[in-house]
Image (cartoon, rainbow, N blue to C red; front, side, top):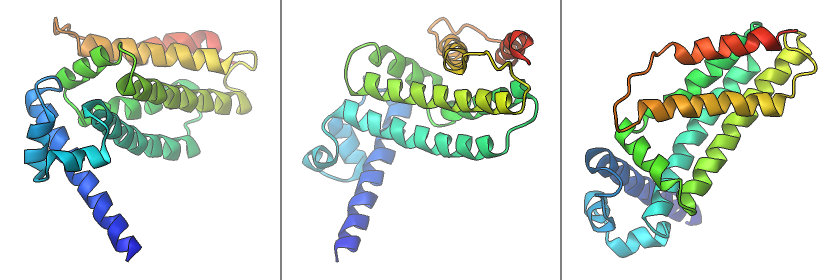
Length: 199
């Protein structure tokens, strides 16, 4: 009985999340209210508040779900890394960039703006950032063990630099000016970094 109830709660939560995702993509975060999400999910507004504290909490749950899926894909890659450390990191960043498959650039822009204010969205973005840093750090440490990355490289700092480059790349893609970005620029930056980091 309790497992049936748990499955029903999980299904209802997914129903709400997918309705919210649809509306956020169609209308944007700021123009989507909880009443519209409730209508799209075919539940009452009060039901949404049983599962999610507020709209920010709902977005945080969506981001956590998406990043967790990408994290699983990254974990699989980390089990079978390329011998070339730069290519291994580039492959990892390609997975992290897939976040754009889940949301539009316009919606990413809104999340970036919302993340500047303390709250659930900034917390989930910081969590996501740390997962990415940890993944790159693991790839660099793998390179150190394989003696392809300098043993003196501080992998925590290096991973932070790489994820900051990824964040800047994404910020350019999502900028309101529609700034065009060379799709190969990020791999080029990574290869330049590795010219100094190879063993």
